[in-house]
Length: 513
Image 1 (cartoon, rainbow, N blue to C red):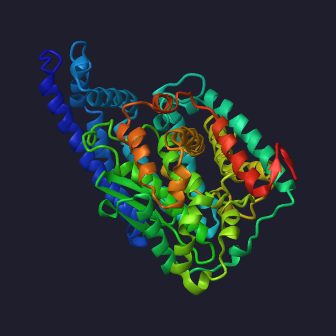
Image 2 (tube, rainbow, N blue to C red):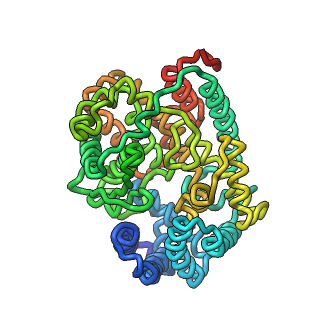
Image 3 (cartoon, rainbow, N blue to C red):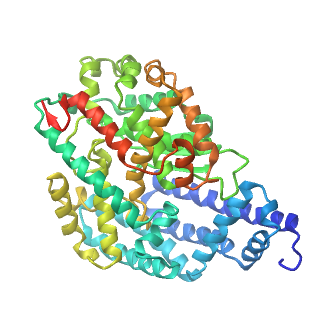
């Protein structure tokens, strides 16, 4: 390939390889979706083996000799400059991935895919039975693999950087420590102010039981309202809500329902809808290239958190949907009022469960996990100590002590899937969402009126133009700078939280009234 230097031919070969990889990933994605939503429990272990085979085939192609040769040919001086920007970015990302993942022996990679597939099934059983020891040996192997992977990939300063880069390109522990230390301090301070306030939003809707079938109707209507395209997607149920984008024309969401806790389904659905709209609106011309994905996991999370919180928990949103909410639930919601609902969906009350956390304390849940992951990687703590360390941090940050591991260390699916380095992107998503929202409000000064009137199209199109349409042509840092003119900072998010809760809990400065 190098000797020929025929870049049109090299590009053709590269795109064909990319197409093969994409096809394997789509089929693997469908199989994973099926396993998490519809597959019978008894068959899941065998499905894990099949998933391992399919994932390995895609992996083998991404690090093959043929892929290496064609990437090197396309990166040659005089050739790379002639490529369209989307191909340049795709080549850069794939070459970086090849250099990184080739360091993992193929046999180890396949064993790891099978391990994590099985671990997710074991995690479900362990969580259901409150049995951390059942899950512990799987998690130990997962952490061991990630320690080894960090060493193989190479890193500067901290092994966590090697894993974090996979989800948030260019982000480092040093940057996160700086950002999270400020955020943690300010959230805890704001939490204390709120707890001292004499204003206590009514919690009577905690006892509101709403039909699951009617909650499904509400979930679908809200998704349609904000702009999720059901002709290119679907909504199903799973133990842990997720979004899977097979391609821009097939983006699937899941949520979960509880009759006595409608907020879980409503806000879980809106959250996944934000992810789904991002996936549906990445341009087809980028599809099949490595530029046809989100700028980063944190930017992806900014979309879900924006729609869930900045929009979905706003007074304007409830002004727009309260009548329909009452119409759908009828007699079950006859006592619901706008004046009580808005404070209710914004109640600040520390919770043991991340996915049920209020908007203010949510980031504390993430910082807790981030701190534990760093300590696990550096062997500062062992997997066996994890429940104890988890409980201690939960008590330190939020004043809560989990009564069992089901509501403590076993509550999240992520570690069973090997997603070490992923959790920080949730808090980053909050921070990104506030920076984007401040900029959007300058471009759409009437956006609050749009929300009141359920006219979400201009807001969605702003996100499509500024964020979705760019795919990963830019890194998250580059994209944020281009859109907002600023580097990543927690200040807009802290302002947003302070202003919101000052209105609800009626305090001025840092003092409760």
